[in-house]
Image 1 (tube, rainbow, N blue to C red):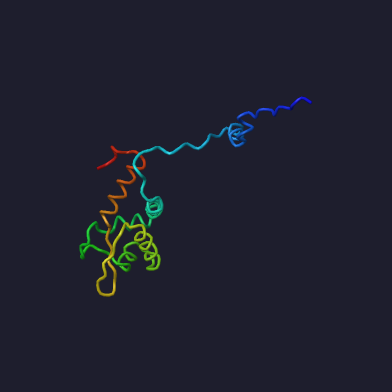
Image 2 (cartoon, rainbow, N blue to C red):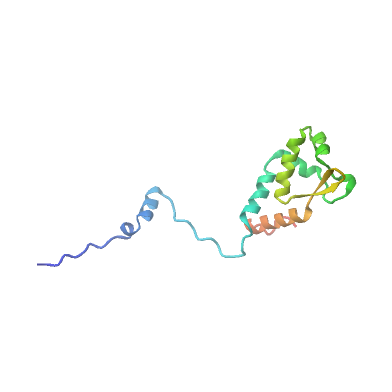
Length: 138
C-alpha cells in the first residue's frame, strides 16, 4: 500500500491571521522602537486629560507659578473670577491636583492654589521625549 504524504501547508494556511490581515489590507503590528524607556503612561495621559478641558486651562492660566500668598486663589476666589459655582471649581481643582499640575497651601480655613512649575516643566520634557521633538521649546 503506497504511503500517503501529507500536503504541505502554505504560510497562509499556517498563519490564518496573516492571510486575513493581507485580505483586509491591514498590517501586522510594528515592534516598538528601542530607545529611552517611556515613563508611566497613565500619569502622562492624566495630564493630557486634565488640560483637555477649557475651564481647567483657564484655571491654570489664572493661578500663579509660585506660592506667593497675595497671588494665590482659593475656591471662592476662582469661582468669582470664572463665574462658576464652587463645587464646579472644586471638581476641576481636584482633577488638576490629581494630575500633579497644581499644589495647594492651607491658610486658615481655605486652601490656596498655585501651578507646580516643576511638574509642568517635567511633563513638557516628557512630551518632547515621547514625540521626538527635541528641538521644540527649552
